[in-house]
Image (cartoon, rainbow, N blue to C red):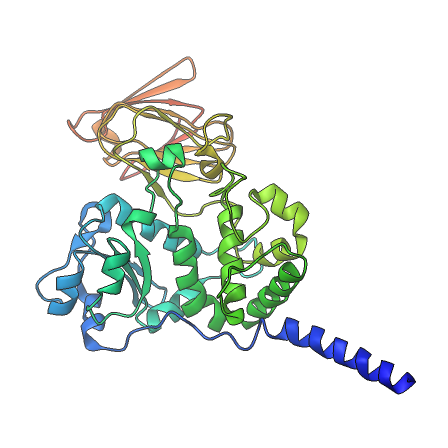
Length: 395
C-alpha cells in the first residue's frame, strides 16, 4: 500500500510538472519573415519627404504587392535594414503612421529596464524582412494574394488617437496586440531567450491561478504570446474604460495587474517601458483640448496618461494638456494652446528661429509663425523650452 501511495504521488507530481512544461515547448514563431526578392526590393522606397513618412507604393514594386496594398512606410533597424509596413486602401495616412509609432515604441531603447536594449530585437525582425500586413478587413486578409508573409492588422480594428472612436472608446483597438505579436515572434523570442523563459513561467502561474483564462481552441503553445498581449492591453490602459469587458486576462488596469498578478507584472516590466516612448499623432478629426492627464469622465485618458510626445494634425485650433512627464508637444497649422503641466516640457516648431515672433507675458509665451499656413500662433503655458529647426531656446 505504501508503494501505491508513492506511485500515485509521483504521478501527480509528473502531471503537475507536465502541465507547466507544456506552456513552453520552445516557442515557434507563427509570424514568418520573407526571403523573396520582391519584398527585399521595398528597401529602396524613399519615404523621407512624404507626409508622415507614408508613401504610395511606386511602380517599381512587384505587381502582386501593388495590387494588394496601397501604402508603405518603414522603420529602419540599427543594422540599416528595414522593417516594412504595407497597408491597403481603407487605411488613412494617419492610421498608417499611428501603427508605425506603436512599432517604434516597442523598439525604442530604454536603459532603465532590464531588457531595454531593443537594437537586436529590431535587427532580428529586419534581418527576416519582417512586414506588418495591414488589410481593410477580415475578408481582405483571407483574400491576400500578395505573396508577403506578415502579421495581419485590420483597418476596422485600429483606432487612431483623437478619432471619435478613440475618444468614446467605442471600438476595441487591436493594434497594440497585433504589433506586439509581430515583435515577439520575430524579435523578442529569438533575441531574449531568458525573457521568453520567464514569460512562460509567468504564464503557467497565471493559468494555474485563473488570472489568465485562455479561450477555447487556443493551442497551449500560444498561451504565453496571448498573455503577453492581454497584459499589454491592460498595461497601456486600453480596456480600463469598461471593467465588464470579457477578456482572457482578469485585470483591467495597470495598478490592479501589479497588485493582483505580481509575477507577470515583474516579468513584463523588464521589457515594457513605463510610458509610451515614440511620438503619437492626434487625428486631424480632433478638436478641443487633448488631455494627457487622467481625467474623470474622459475615458480616453486611461490611455493618454501614459503618453509623453504628441503632435496635433490638421488645422483645427486645438490644444494639448500635458502631464507630469517631460513632454514634447507639437501643434498643427492652426492656432494652438499648449500646456505642458509639470515636468520640463518642450514645444516643437517646424521653421527656423528667426521665422517667428515671440512674446512673453504673465507666464505665457505667444509664438507666432511669420510664414503663413505653417505653425500659426501658439500660446505656451508651463513649457520651458521651444525647439526650432535650427536651435532650441529657453522660455
